[in-house]
Image 1 (cartoon, rainbow, N blue to C red):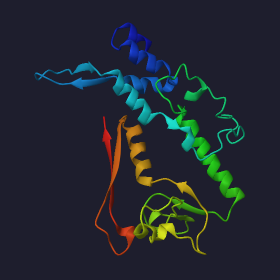
Image 2 (cartoon, rainbow, N blue to C red):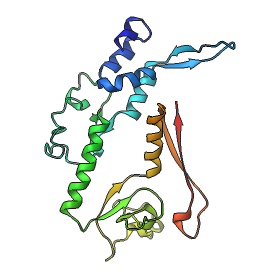
Image 3 (cartoon, helix red, strand yellow):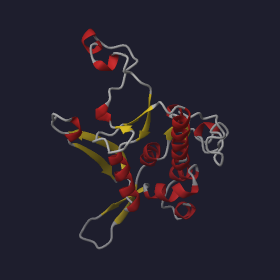
Image 4 (cartoon, rainbow, N blue to C red):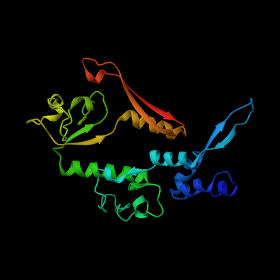
Length: 232
């Protein structure tokens, strides 16, 4: 990164953003400062430097994890002992607001550590409350012997006030004797598979993904869902 700056391949704005990232993230982020342009039938592509705002948006979408949305206790130093508490972590944007002036919300800049804490939180919670129903956000058939309910096998109760009387009649606004507390223990497997493929093939998301649902079927587990990622 330093070499690219001194060679004037990137500007001051790019360098300042890159310097705030973890060392193992800087190389990937540096690649987002450019795009290749093929013109005139040449054998080699021309490298075009992209605006600083492009790099900033990539960092926001790919690296930052908003801590207020974290399911775990950010003050728990024993959740992952080697990581410690998030409160005093220098990898948190809110730890040094003068350094991370571009981002107002407190965010984690270490996705690996964040994921480890999520996994530890799930394991700890399930161990302390074995009666919890384990659920997944993914639509699929329930695997034989699995204790995890796929999204098409439960209705999530909504706590907010319905927008209308008709909406309030929906099952998601009703609590009955069969209502149980649950915990999300598996994310959508399709998203995980795509992210692993991108990592293995050195591809990056452009920050946009969406799910396309097929025509309804008598069994929701048979409904086709296409997951699409826009790649750079």
